[in-house]
Length: 370
Image (cartoon, rainbow, N blue to C red; front, top):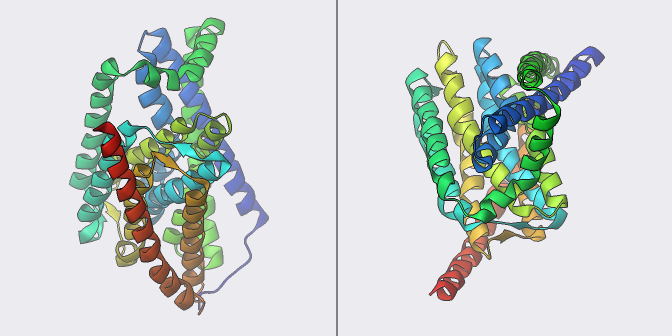
């Protein structure tokens, strides 16, 4: 059994400061970049679909790049996969519990299938236990193609899509009027600096915690680091759900998860000298959990183009079970031998239920459309 040592106060403080810096840095970066784009005359829809949507993933990018440069590839990998699992199961589930979520047909027909394809592609690339530089370059090329397609397709978006980002754009208009361009550039620079400092604090603190608790960097990356870097997505989606902007909450999560796989994992694979190592344990557990969580969105979304409170509770329950298994297994607890089989028994039954309900919803949609 691994040796557990007390986590020092300084380590916890560094972890908290790192998380706060990541959130603050991402906020400054998004506001500054979006305001500059608005001043330059870029369409509001493009800003919403790119800068604002991808900006919430800035902490994941900063942390994974920093970890990759420090050769701490377990944290870099765990951060991406763990963040996507947290995005779908925890954050999407919690947002649905707040008041149910609406899902646009565009997300069901385009964005979720793209996320599934990206997840499968990343899994196939990792079968040799590594996301190498070529793999990373291919993934990163994917985000460039996706962003270019978003910009082109935004020209044909309806007024309803533009209205999704009306509040954010109005806020940005106020910023443009009140502050000169130099100040907006300063926000971007300050945001980048704070992100870099915050990512280093978080990675170093997480590594220290892993050593002091006797668990692997991968487990810390999948849990503590992933949750810390997912705070912007959590705040954005919960706030959108509270305000009744329930379609924005879903789009934020799906877009962020796609960005994590294509840009964050891709860029990390490119800059890591020996690639991003992927353990057999991750191929057996973490990747399948991420892929299953992504695939289950299809039948859930097709069932009335919404996520109910009950479905949100189920998603959260699976996230709790996943994290509980990671912690118990890392501590060599016998309880892990109970939690694992229990989840494996319950999960297929829940997935089958979602599939049946989703199929019925799809048939109702076709009958109505016909």
